Length: 373
Ligand SMILES: NC(=O)C1=CN([C@@H]2O[C@H](COP(=O)(O)OP(=O)(O)OC[C@H]3O[C@@H](n4cnc5c(N)ncnc54)[C@H](O)[C@@H]3O)[C@@H](O)[C@H]2O)C=CC1
Ligand SMILES: CC(=O)[C@H](N)C(=O)O
Image 1 (cartoon, rainbow, N blue to C red):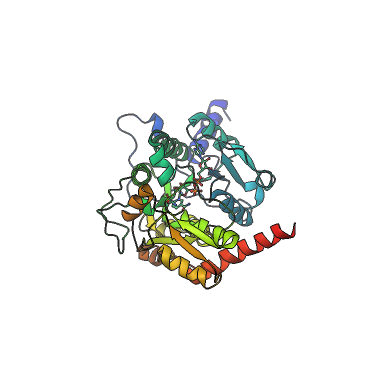
Image 2: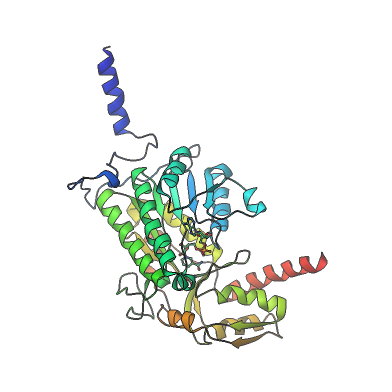
């Protein structure tokens, strides 16, 4: 067989079936000229398919925040410890470092991100790096860089290497002119925080890459997430995490939002399960690429009332932070997630009483352990 012919055959095979075995060749968007390849909206989009022996290779960016460590542990149970790489720009605590692969990754460093994806044969990316609502307002230029420039890097790397990409959005992607009770998936989105603006940008860019280049982009708008064993990173809903800690430790809590501020919330186990479920949903079941997900809505007063049932001496006082209050007053009060429930079967497990019991049990047992030591 002539060598040239053989080489041509190999080359054409490689072009038809990239190493990940998952995607029709599409010229990387970074290198597209003025008339790039158009992909019709109803095209058969590449999704990374995998068998038992061929699990997705996962990278989590910004993984040392409130949600990333829990996500890594959840995904490792499903896909195997070594198939899930946690990354961040911070140094991991020892128990996290020892629990599975960890790597330094600054999402503002495009080459570094690409190198990690290539060297580790990553196929799924969960993009968690962000500055949240309150810290974003305190440092707008950094929030703009991390939340917007960082997202551009992630989108390009994901598109170039045929990754399935999850980017979380938030109730903060809505604003004072959105319907607030309830807030549907599709409505006016004019947020007034840099966080919200960057998340609307992420939703739109992700969907644009999906329609334009076939990027398998999936996005959930999370409500405020409540976790027991990780600290929130500077958001407006943080009070709903801190209250449990303070109730158990001190029997009292000073809240930085007004007592009647109603916001959508979710326990972390539901959040992580929703994230995996939407990532595993067959592409044809997704009528949209960005979904609201919700579990419950409550005010600080209602949460305090529920805590009181377990901690009879509990007292709540209010010292309102005007920045956080203004943000909360512009966010949804109730979140309509009927499309997620209809399309891919979303169903939450934790409502308010179950959340409070779970959180207090966790902190109660933690403090008993601390006292015993
Ligand atoms: N926690 C919540 O209640 C909600 C979170 N979300 C979203 O979920 C994602 C994760 O949230 P959290 O874990 O709560 O955030 P977090 O603020 O706790 O953690 C964010 C992480 O990003 C990292 N980071 C910052 N700059 C970076 C950079 N240049 N390169 C790489 N990493 C960088 C930080 O070191 C930090 O560990 C975020 O995108 C957030 O917007 C959405 C709605 C609610
Ligand atoms: C709801 C969120 O996105 C976050 N927890 C914040 O309060 O900024």
